[in-house]
Image (cartoon, rainbow, N blue to C red; front, side, top):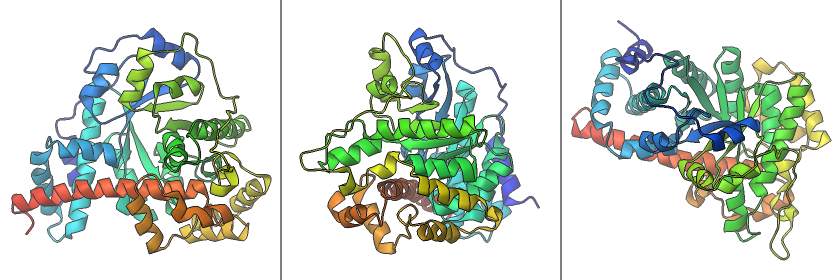
Length: 423
């Protein structure tokens, strides 16, 4: 009998006969996007919506990213309702005693991979596929599912692993296995400095739009340039490591919110752009596009507010003592480390706010807050440094994605009950 893994891979790839190098859509040249590309930035679209992507796709674009939120939007349209029951029967045929949550996890995996293959087929694009949020703290299962994603389409899939203590280690193992890695949910230069040296993924991220929002939404300032400053500082750190031959990692400017940010961040390695922001830029492109990587923009704050109040420096500063702590870490037997070992290492070095040990109450609060934390709740710990703003934003992002993952899982569960596959 075939294993679940083999049966699922066979099922997902059934009928997939893409001729790599030959997209199913007509791809046109666009001189305005070519200017951005020529400034040193690769251009990706951040969407799972094929129709929206098709309106913008051109020869300067080469990848699409999906995530739990974007996939959930597609699933809630009902376009894959029939696929869910078929997928369940395939899994149950191979593993009749599988538990309900593991069954749902397998079906979510199938849906993500199936949708990503459709994107590959239409656009001949590289596609980032994201793991189920239940795996974020589990090194072994992250490695297992990451390898399975890659095996489905090694020609075009990048595997997204979220930045968590377990994520640093599981992503490292996937990179060692030759899996192209998009290490997601990064918010700071120090987040990605560690990733570039410890994990060495192909790509790291700064979710810059959310950084602007946390300042604006909490009335600490108007939000201008918070994410831009963090992104450009991160790019400079990553470039230094590449120049020294210590890392191959490239930076993605993620969570872009406006067309203006595309011009303001030209020269960053990669943009992953929501279609709204990309369309906004194309409607009002910069006459001249030059690299902005050396720029260090000012961040205006509200009257009386200071960076120290909310730990803003954690977003764009990598202090010498922090770099020393990273060097000490790299001298350990890295492949024997556990997630809690990483946390203990940075705690001992005086940077406990980098990878905090979140309590269940913290997780519940972050989930209730949504993707933008409510500042008064966290103020004391941010001011004291017990929690870094980058760490808090990472927690909020992970559990906002988990909320959308739950909505996707709930739809799967409902469809399985309707089909009388589950009681």
